[in-house]
Amino acid sequence: MRTDRALIFDFNGTLFWDTLYHRQAWGAMSLRLRGVVLSEAESHYLDGRTNQQTLAYLLGREIPEDEVVQLSNEKELLYESICLSHRPLALANGAEYLINKAKQAGRAVAIATSAGPDNIERYKKWFNLSDLVPDSLIIHDNGMRRGKPFPDLYLDACSALGCVPATCTVFEDTKAGILAAQAAGMGCIYAMKSPGSDIQTLQAMEGIHGLLDDFTQFTLDQ
Image 1: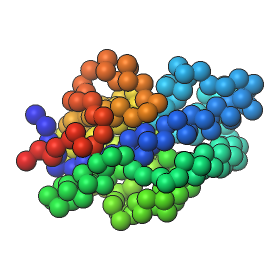
Image 2 (image 1 turned 90 degrees about the vertical axis):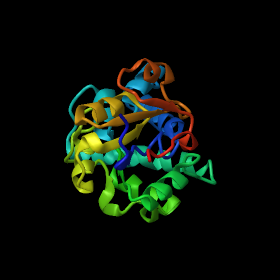
Image 3 (image 1 turned 60 degrees about the vertical axis):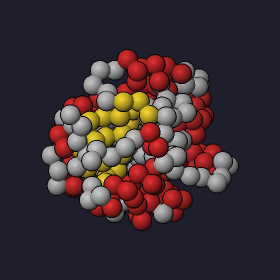
Image 4 (image 1 turned 45 degrees about the vertical axis):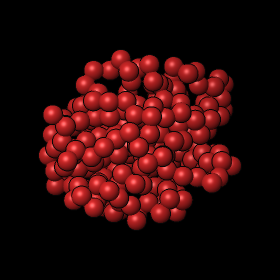
């Protein structure tokens, strides 16, 4: 049975279809750090993970915080440049309408994303994100939470919302994100077939309540 007391959205590849932009930036970082670009399989594996997780994978070792910050800044400046080369930037089709309709219907809305604080600031500027979701309900990688597929981001989002996970509906686009939502005990999980997502893997995963081409295909449970 579906429950829509609260909606929790992943951001990258879900609300903002930027998977291919991140992949291009990480491909350049991979080439610099290890001499080869990311394979498609590696990209799918790393989709939805934090910068620290991705850098540890690329370098094959744990990375001290100062090095994570330095390399993350390098990657995110590449990513920003790629994004801005694709202006005008917009959220996924139907996303703003759904969020506003949910709020009008008394549903709480939050974001649970692996994005770091610098990118969150970019999204606030690019999309007026704080007008859609209060800053206190934008749960992101703050360096303290374990990244997806661990459930920390979703559990913290539920805590911020004051909702139990079983009453929340999640929107995700990656295997790691879906595993995180499942581990958190979310009531419903919908997968987004955005450009660059591993659709074959998403289709094969158990516990998915639906696959969406965009947010116009989702109707709030009345």
